[in-house]
Length: 379
Image 1 (cartoon, rainbow, N blue to C red):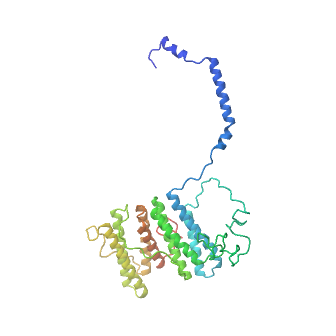
Image 2: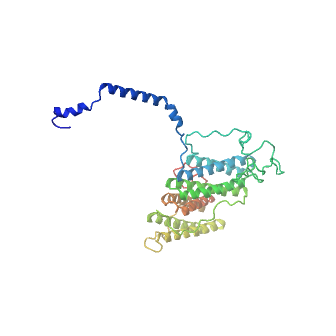
Image 3: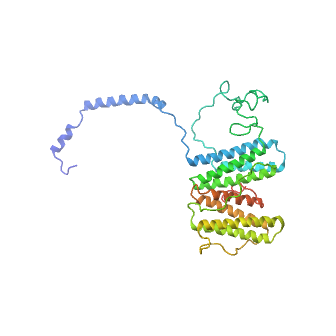
């Protein structure tokens, strides 16, 4: 804009102004066009592709996998329980189911995008489902002659042992061994998911869930006399520091494990029989882990080595009470280590969390759904 407008300045602007008649014709054309678009609006929306399910990222895949495992355990327990009469086995089954339900809730449950899913095909010829929705099942009574009525025949979705292609027992055929197997598999997969999770908080939760499933498998195997493997072997010796873990955290691990070993040695000296034997063996394991962490941290034999000659112990001289206290504390320490460590370097921490919690329970600590997570409600 010029400071001093003149008549010469105004002339060009007057020439660019549209005559009224031309402007009226333009307005009429625009009105017709707008009306046409509005009239066709529904057609435009119908031609737009419907929204699709978003592709799950790594965190969602790991989370939903753990949810599926927990739901699978709960379903197996519900199927098996009516055929179990032993009170001890029933108690462990009920506990495993309750923990599985809590795991599902803590993990966020089954993902639902809110989008409508395609309708299931109606039952009948060619649908592959019966009126009850059982895939591939017929309406005849199962036989044993290998015909279409045989559970192991083609088209039934189960084999002669009563399991489907995924290894899931057919309804009404599951045993407590199947529950143990499911718990073992769930613990292994959930523990691996903890190691692979890009989300540190989810990794810590998954590691705790895996430890709970591991202990449930052990307890059910013991209650039923199952010969199915009830969990991983003793964790391998520590040989490398997890990525992302600082010197202070490594020093805490060294001192915690060494103090545990010292405490077990003292309580062993105050005990006898099987309790003494168990305490001596556990003391050696903790001392070895302290040495492993010191070597991994590079502090073994240096002025930075935090290990001491003696440590203060709880006033209670009961070996079992001491064991419950120290193992539960180590479970919390290793759960925190899982969260602090970089992904794909958490496997040792996950395994040591499960090991510490299994030993706490073995010494009489009541099982909980989320070992090592003090912020969760016990139960």
